[in-house]
Length: 466
Image (cartoon, rainbow, N blue to C red):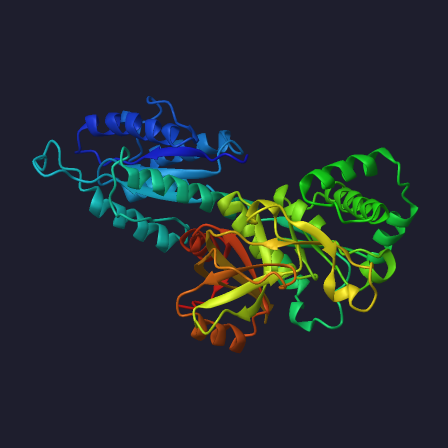
């Protein structure tokens, strides 16, 4: 269920007029549909006024939710008036999905007994009881908001992103193709800790991939089809035919792992064996996978893949795994973020060029075809990473932007100039707290969404870097 479908809940307190509920049922359904989302709603005659007040009505709503299990990925609590916390608790304590609490604003000139809502206060009441019962929920700004407002449309967009992250990360699988290279202890991780958070790691020996590639015929239908995809994806004009064949075969094998093991994302050992045995660098294959919507990180940085996956779920756009690589002039808030060539083509200024990986080719020219070189385009971005330590999964999340500032032609790989406010103290904090030399990057500002999903629903630790 990729598109958000919300189960709608309407709260009530008996001395408020029924007209407030009727108006809310009409306005909320229209707002959700106009924002491009789906909903399910109980029949108006299931409870008094089609809302929930008492425990008995709450139990009816809980039964209705159970009957529709799997048909919704979030619940929106609409408070046209104060709303009763007991009915809400009975209805939603076992719902198992994110909950957004929306409360109607009062209007000056309509503060008499027939029109005053008091939802401003009632929202606190339900939040308090949910907190007491350990029911996770979401409150977004502003505290009260009318369904027809632009602010509520933004709330719906943020809540949909939270639902995607939470529901997508409750349980998911990462394929680790190859072992961590001995030279990179920085990318170590603890599988048992990850499993406690519902993250399953499926491991594959790189020798198996190499064996499958070496056995595969150049003219097999899958290889021929994959070559066409790759050649149309970016500029392969400089790449020898035999190297394109090898890259296509690797891509076919990785696709088979993804399909056969139902992998949600992948991390790959991209050196040294790839260039020493197969004579290629798989950077462009990771680029294509990320553009295809399959999150893939390089250098067996599995933790970066977790962050990339979270941001892909939130933004529904490709993500990147990059090095904190170079200063840019003497501006303390600017940094060149870089990797050899796994950046999704859609996040680059223009079509990349597949080259012989300059780091590998330095000692053995022709062994590293597959680095997709270019420059990262300008966009607002979120950067994040995580670590497993002492049985905990700990994240940081920050925001910045890529600029259009140039990096000279001689700069190898695919990089971009990023601006991050107060970058220097943040780098110190990341280094002192054992975070890696990579950071995952996603399109758009997602700190609010990720912090909400990580902290309130998924139980991750989040370290503030502000």
